[in-house]
Image 1 (tube, rainbow, N blue to C red):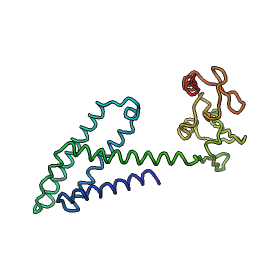
Image 2: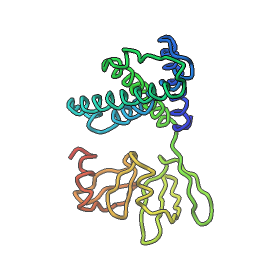
Image 3: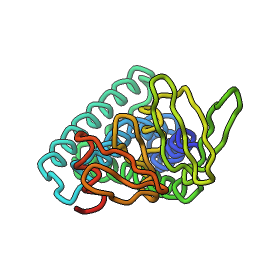
Length: 235
């Protein structure tokens, strides 16, 4: 499923679930749905924060978590007050007293975290399924559309204005796409070893301090990328 479509569907489903809870507190359906929707921005913000490096590493910054939760609660409280103010203007005849739950920071934190954690882990599951699928890349070579499995690519070489793609099958393709774009597309399975070379991690072996061997060919390792290459081989 497309990631954007998934997030939209998750947002709609979560809004209706939240609306059902607010209906049980005595709010009309339209007002309940509005309140449920107002929780989405805070939930998405927290979900984004969970993906930051400082939260995904081994050493989590607890102080940053407290600051973000505090900011989320204040922001959510403001949205709730804004909604109730809007309800009073929209329907003066309808007397709606703000539920005491909205003044409870623990309730707001719980609801925001439930939304954020749910979206975070569902997105992670989708990413894992995407990685399980064979990655393919499509590009144009000599005016022909070429589709390759990324695992079939040995290395990418940049020569001035052209880029050459070498494959396990011995094929050679030309591309006008810069090597920097190839690096972004191929991502984790490939490593940059030189300004002119991007190689498949599973196809190389270390050959001296300044070279790697890829399918029997010696490729240079520049000083800029030397540490990354050594780290790959745990030297």
